[in-house]
Structures are given as structure tokens and as C-alpha cells.
Image (tube, rainbow over all chains, first blue to last red; front, top):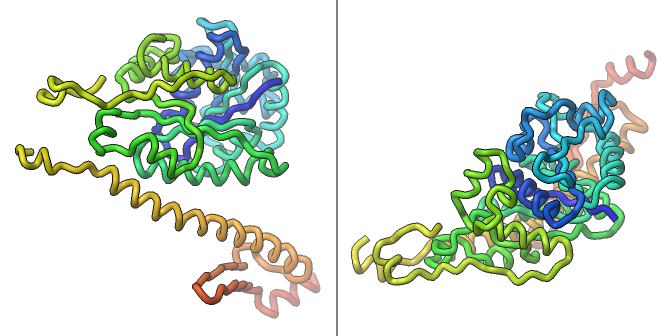
Length: 271
Length: 90
């Protein structure tokens, strides 16, 4: 039975697209059949992060408007056979996605894949609502920073009211993914700690992705971090998170902020 | 930061946590009310539109909540009498 997952946040720049690519690739590496879908019409970027920007011929809007069939628009990943991408269009008409059209495409995708991962645009407007509309599960990407936590709280409210599941009196399964976490700063009480965020949002934790230079390296070369550098800390955290989504129990490796005397004296940044 | 500053240093995260907790407690109640106002506005508009010609942007619904009493205000701006007669005859 296919699962539809929305990666959302309200706030922009917290790591939705990076997360969509990393989780999608991790699930595909574990043998799942995955399609990642870019809902950010007009500002598409998932194609870039996946390294498929020069292979987009048809996109989501073409499929909805009937100019292309879904299989023509699906871009198969060159590294992983079980990973596909449905790109957003660069059209400036943000109403190009229709409610009916999205419903039809989501139905078709459910028939083809184990996982459909919807990369939501930022904000709480139509595009974000359409991205979450068909979701069974939601990953709410949150930075340990007040504006991000506040926006996540708004998104939780929308997931509980604007989704098809909510209208049927069922609940979307919601998870917090804490990204750009700097354990050393949290240990010095300079940054909201994991428990602070979870307590405020009262939702379960899917994973903690440490702040890392590897994330930028991966997007520079157009590869999901779980493929390009699977052993680095953020990639391992993403891979563990994907296994939890898949129902596995994986112990949470919480980055510790403790530094030795050397670190305290010379004040180096944690990697 | 001097040596004393180092020992006195307190992070700003507790301030952030407290501000968020207060803010969200407020926003969660406001959000549920504003959702109600949106629904009320749509339904009131639909009923009025059955009988009168009104522009959707001329219907204002607002709710004011105080400790003792809450007021719902519905403000409908209608077209002038002449316009309505014209519409009825046309």
C-alpha cells in the first residue's frame, strides 16, 4: 500500500528540499520504490538538488494540463533505479496546479510507487495546502529557532484541518525532523534544545540532522546527501529517519554537545 | 568575553523558549477563532446572496472576545437602492 508523505515547514530555507531528496534516496537505497514530487511551482529546486535539472522535459503542470502523460514526466534517477522525480514547472502561474488534477496524479502515483514524497513550497498558501492535501504522513522540518518553531505550529494546525485525512476525521501521522542542529550551542543554552522544541510542538521526533558543511557539498554536486556521502553524520541521521518512517525501530543518536578541555580552550566549531 | 563573563554567561535559549510558549498559547486560540470566523463569513454570505445582491468583499465578520462577553459583528454593505432596483428590473 503506497504511502504519501509531505515534507513541510511553513518557513522557507529550513531544509525541506534537502530532506525530500535525502529521505527519498535513503528509502530507495533500502529497496523501496520512491517518487519525489516538487510542489513548488514557479520556484522549483528539487530537480537541482537531485541533479536532474537538465533532464526535465515534462513536468507536473504538463501532466495536470494533459500535455504529457505521467510516465513521460517521471524522471528516473541515474544512480538509483527505484527513485523517480516529478519536477514542478517554472511557470509563474501559481494556480497551474488544480485540486482535481493533483488528486488524479496522486492516485496514479499511489498505484506505481511504495512512497510518494511531496516537497511542499514554503508558506501557508494554496501550494502548501495542495502538497499536504493527500498526505498520510507529514515530516515537519524545523530549525531550533523561534520563527521556525512558530511556523511549524501553524503547519500542524493546517495538517489537522485542511487535509483529506482531517476531513475524514482521521489524523495525518506527524513527525518533527529537527535540522541544522548544533549540539554544542544547544549545550551552552544558546540554541533551543531538542526537548524544548518537542515539548512546545508536542509531536514525536523523527530525527535530528546536525548542522554540517556536507549538506552544501551535496547540493553543489546535485546529489542527495544519503547517496553522495552516506557515512557523514547528517546522511546517517537521514537514513535512520527514513527507516523510522518505514516502521523500523532505530535508536536515536542524539548529537552530544559535550566538548573536551581542548575544545573549550580553543573554541573550535563542532563539525 | 572576560573570565568573569565566561562564568556569568547564560545562553539565550531559555528566553526563546519562554517567548515561544507564551506566543503559541495565544496564537493557538486565535487561530481556531479566526477559522470559525472564516466559516461563518462564507455561510452568512451564501444566505444573504440568496436574497440580495452583495459583493463578497462588502461582508465583514469579526469576533471580539473579552473575559465576560464575546461579540460577533456582521457588517454587510449593500448597493444603493437605485442600483438594487436596476438590478431587479434588469
